[in-house]
Image (cartoon, rainbow, N blue to C red; front, top):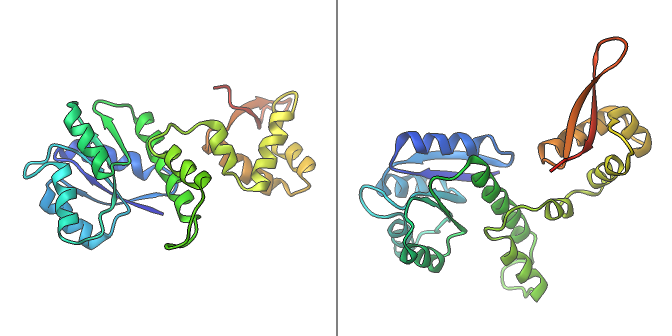
Length: 229
């Protein structure tokens, strides 16, 4: 689980962001802070992996908070700026301090989710690299940099799927018409509940669409097809 601390001076905005993060698979909100002092305390207590960080705090700026954490010799969490600050100096400073991305308010929930998903993939890729002190090649470096702040593309997500789930996606994509879990299970050589579980995950990942069809009994049947967009 990626542990997220939401830092925003506006209580309503902070809570809205926390709800958005909490609804995403693989993320958990460990707290909400509304000042830099409160954020410092929660960083020490909750050990977040990622700060969802506003620039304008009542005591110091979000970037000053990052500087204070570093100056105190603490482990500085990764941070994603979510701010109304549009000046180029703020953007440049955020980049220099290592911000994962810089989202300018107002932004959509989809935009926030996109960047959080990019962060999740980046963190997983980083975790899978050799241990500290070991060397990596240029391909690994390029892949890590390409995920920072990048929109999550379908092809990128597909490459991260485990083999069986990738096979389920392939079966649905190759089908000439929407296909049921039972039909997927037959081609896969697995039980219907197993196929259903993979299909539900692929729908959640927005790689497949689910549609309901009604047979002669009037009962709806779930059928799956490649995502339309």
